[in-house]
Image (cartoon, rainbow, N blue to C red):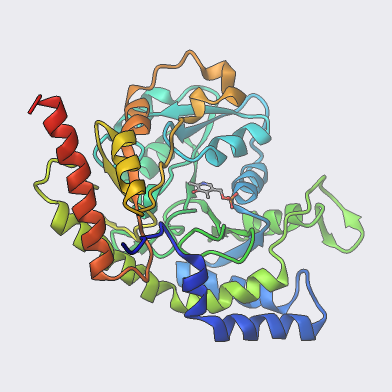
Length: 374
Ligand SMILES: *Cc1c(COP(=O)(O)O)cnc(C)c1O
């Protein structure tokens, strides 16, 4: 029985071992490790890829969001609208600058923030909206941007899971005032360590983030802002340049895996991902829903198939957000209890997908038989 890993980064990196080795040698031989030519080159290449004017490399995705919020002057007393069912970093970035996250429920079909529910969450204190392109599928940005324009709000995309995705033909990360992304190793474009970036067409915001990431300094030993140390280092930038060269090919493989999943799992009673016409997703995750998710997960585990739950506990139910424990957010609570991410790896082959599908159906039909008392 061949195991199917969730994502085998070791094997993926074997496939591009030469450019990674070359990146390592360039940086080691240069003797320059922070804020140098690799970062500058990667920022230019990734800005071009994302179809924006400016890319600023930072320490990680959480910091990309946080520095952007600070660059826009968001702080104590302000409210920022966030999805109720995102990875907790989206909320933590808001809390980190002293502002308050205001949760809006997702559309149950796409799992992305429901634009129609945003209006009623806007108050006098609202400053910004952070839509997340969850699982690599762009949120419905046009109505969100229109609403933000009417209320004078900033829109910041959380594009951590969506490198290469498109919305109505345009790149995720280029669809609003600014975007934050993450190069955590498991993302579609992952570093070999932590990393992140800010994307924007606004030169002033890009400069502000450049300043904030480097102790609030633009000129060495001159500090006009109380900043941070949050930089994308030369080694990670060099690795990312090598990996950016294969991002489109690996995203295309993810699309093929997703297509095969969707074809083979159609009409099996399992709730599958829904892709609206406006979205060309990059399948960071392939997320199904099952009423007895935990049993299905353990069945797959017993068959050597690794799955992950994204995410088992919504932010408002985390202990660190005890102040929101009274919130009732039924859509994200339902999703948290039913979602299961199937293996998604650019190097999976058709036989791997068939095996995952076969065991997923076996696990589900056992459940259905039990429920029906057969
Ligand atoms: C990964 C992720 C982040 C945080 O990125 P890090 O680099 O891990 O800090 C933020 N938002 C979303 C949606 C993510 O998936």
